[in-house]
Length: 176
Image (tube, rainbow, N blue to C red; front, side, top):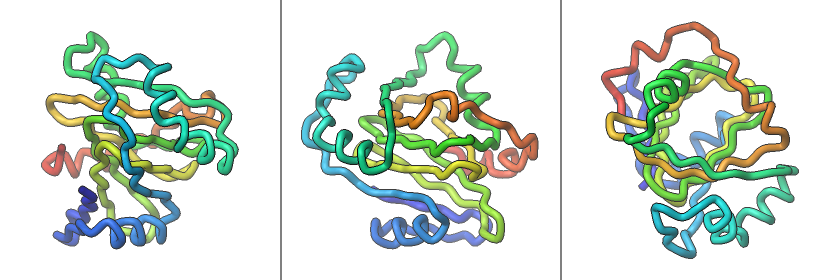
């Protein structure tokens, strides 16, 4: 289910087409892929990439992405506190941040000039592409579980550049 939330306006949009249109107006690409297969939670990277190859290959070719990988974040990961802290800080990247949600969920937050701050709940089947330079952060919730395919032109372009604005601290009550 699509859900876009604008907390400062006390507004929530749940219709897929409206969410997609709103995001498109902000330069953010969002679409839903019908999941062709259910991938087992313990599936390795090769299995996941193969399962979604019919979607990934044309999308990556069209958008000139050179590589893809799979990351799975679970609440039992020893490095979870560092990851949560890193993702919860507003940042940008010099390359698009492209994520296809295989399973689980997460909340992307956006801070775009001349727009109210908003979040998008992403779940299995959601593809989200955050353009380079867009201020954002990611909330994985109290009991995180998310498995995503990440696509890159150059993985080095995905290194976070933190804004140190601390704007994200104003929205913790709307956490996942």
